[in-house]
Amino acid sequence: MNCQKKKLSLLDGLAYGELEKIERNRTVVNYKKGETIYKEGTKSLGLLCLNAGKAKIVRKGKHGSEQIVGLKKPVDFIGMHALMSGSSYHNSAVAMEDASVCVIDKDDFLGVVNNNNKLSMKLIKMLSKELDDAESRFINMSQKLLRARLADTILYLMDMYGTCPDGQTINCTLKRNELAALSNMTTANVIRAISSFSKEGLISTEKKRLKVKNPELLRTISVADRVVQTGLP
Image 1 (tube, rainbow, N blue to C red):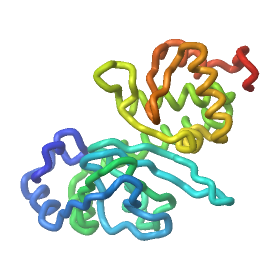
Image 2 (image 1 turned 60 degrees about the vertical axis):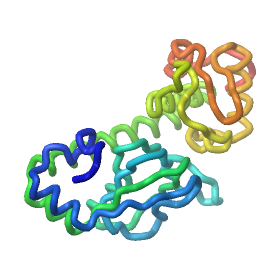
Image 3 (image 1 turned 60 degrees about the horizontal axis):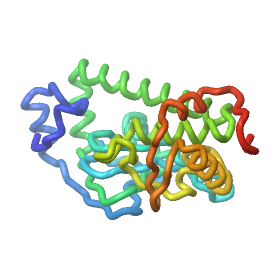
C-alpha cells in the first residue's frame, strides 16, 4: 500500500495480498478548508483515513446549533462506526484546513476484515476506546463548570494537535464559536472565559490561535469541582 503513514495505522501488519486488495480501488480525495467530507444521513461507501490536515466531527442541534463531538488528525479513521454497522452517518465531518482523505472501497476493506482475526480485534479495541473517550468527554462537558470546560478543551486541543515550535502555541486554529461548540458553552461564555484566563496569565491569544502559558494550572482548573475565581460559574 503506497501510504507512508501505514505503519501508524491499524493497517500495519497486513499481509501483502491483503494490502494489495485494499489498494486496488483506493482513491484520494482532497478537500478545501470548510468543505464537508461526509454528511449526516448519508451512507458510508468506504473506509476513510485522514491522510493530511485536520477535521472536526459535528452534529446539529435541534435549533441548528453545531456541536463538535470529535476532532481528527492525520492517520485517524473517520466515520468508522457507520461503516462497520452499515448504518447512515449520525454526524458530519468537515475539513478544518486543507485536507486529503484516502478512501478504501467498503467491500474490499470488509473482505479483509472478515478473514483477519487480528485486524478484527484491532477494530474492536479502537471502536471501544473511541466510545470510552466520547463518554468521558460527554460527562466532563455536562458536569464541569464553565471555566473547567474551557480548560479541558484547551488541554484536549494541545494533546490532539501538539504545539508549534515555541512549545506553547497550539498547532490548530479555531474560531470562538468552534471552541464553544467543542466545550458545550455559549460563544459569549467562551469569550469571557478566554479573557479571564488571559488576565490571569494562563493563556494568550493571537488571531485564532491559543498560546498555553500555564498548562499545570489549567489542569488544576480542569479537574476542580468548584472554581472560586472571578464572576464566572
